[in-house]
Length: 305
Length: 327
Image 1 (cartoon, rainbow over the protein chains, first blue to last red):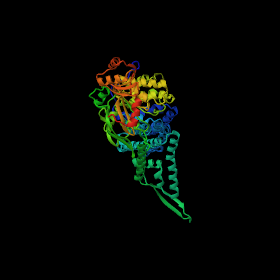
Image 2: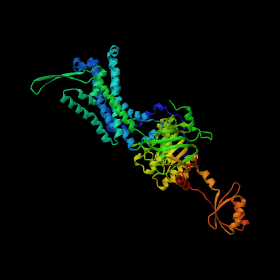
Image 3: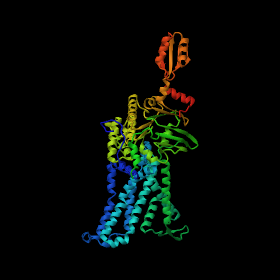
């Protein structure tokens, strides 16, 4: 079917492996995503905290730099599990906004333009389609969360020595899993909303709502009922607890809160965070609901009965 | 993992007489909830271009969607080139192209980008996909507009872009669902010409679903007419026309009785319409020349002689009235 021949001809060349076809979707999606200069600029900004993290690690091992900046080494943040966990959280915040910008139109556009039959009439299953769309988000979020964190962990290991690496190698799984769980949750949420709502602005609004409204409501429950069980509906708290669990820093006991009762007597209550398994369970349930919705909505044609 | 060698070979090997039918229906039934849409469809379709006809709601699009794997059969199954549509869905999808009825494209993409993406999803490597995207867009006549965004295309151009994505990977079977929908006459002619070219290339079989009988008549050699989810007619249009060549309408002047006697002696069946008009069925081995000879011998003038030819419209209307099955 050469341009000059103008005849129909079958393709006789080699084919790509079937398992890799879903990765075609993110490759083409990034072309549109990085067409926006604003998004590209924001994506670059996402790496700034990582630069700060790298500088902090470097300062710990460069005494002449510390001396020239007249900083006491004890004033520096220690490089330990808390250090990497804190930066995972910071990057998680950036990841949320990246997902907010990239995620909502991914499935919605295809649904609005009836493009799903075009994907699904090819050797691409519905699962692979969803995987392809989710990997658009997951690859981007991985690039700003666990991948650079892992590189910085190796950087710290290189500067500190093999003994430090051997003692802290368990952190690798915490960094990778912490980043991946957040990326997976955001990818699932954005794709589910995108499959339900065809308009980008509304989808972005709903994602913001899902993140912030339960958080505010959870805080309200915590204050009114003097508990910490309100955190169970807050996505931020759930991720914070799960990540803390992975880094081994999870502590159920909060500060003791003191307040006066109606009769004026002083009451002290030990605030207790919900158990870790509860956070995992809620995250699992959210993922299961998202998958069920995606399975219901992502179809070549909807059957109207 | 690359596709099995047999599938790749199948993509390039032309079909022979001994090959399995293009579509083989084995009691295929599809229901949505309790509502049966396709009912126990049976038969093997072997045409180069198969026209799928039927009134609205007859199940044409559902049949195509089921063959594409979008819906699961509730009973029975079907095979495309010998591959079961349920068990070998991915193998089948490598062999087919699909042009949907409704507007379908990916937003914010140029035509060449869109067609290239579709080619890559069909398994072509990126370089080959880009090359064939350009080629197929030139082939359908969108060469000059291939760098324009799809949203800016007219309806006719979008139809052509849909055709381009359906053929970009060089499929062996192409499903075209109402390809001339919404097209103005020149655009429709262009689309019909393209479909006929693809058919005549011998490189691909075509299943054309349309409610426009003329489109099907111009493009297809076989037709499958559905009515209420059942096969009303399946026939080869050319054979149907050939069989109709034996029916003649005659208008004569002269001694009708002598002529009829001579016809009876010749072994022809006839029916008298009016005093001067006859319907004649020619038997094997008897030619029109024999009729002229008889007319000369019986001093009868043949004022008019025409083949009674069933148009597709006749066949369609007959199927809607009788529901006779050709399979």
